[in-house]
Amino acid sequence: MMKTEIAKLYYSIGEVSQELGVRSSNVRFWCKEIGIKPSRSHITNNRRFTREDIELLHKVKGLSDTGIYTIVGIKWALEAELKTKR
Image (cartoon, rainbow, N blue to C red):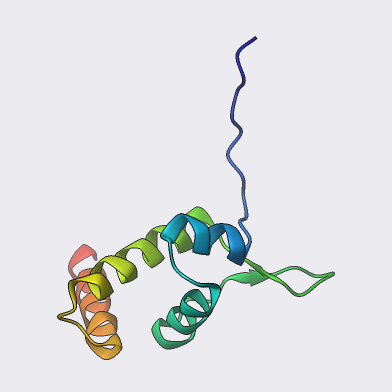
């Protein structure tokens, strides 16, 4: 029997940190500094990340892994990319 994978709407910080290969504290720091605001669960108040949030965090991690950018530089690079897409 073939197993069909269903895409999730929201991911926990643990799932995101595991996908990125970093600690949860890195994800929280990047969100705070870059301005990523994941939604919150109404019951437990846990962060809920969308696929778009995760894709943006992949970009942040990629820029961070180069060792060239500081967190401020990463923020500027992402803002410049956003302006060019408009």
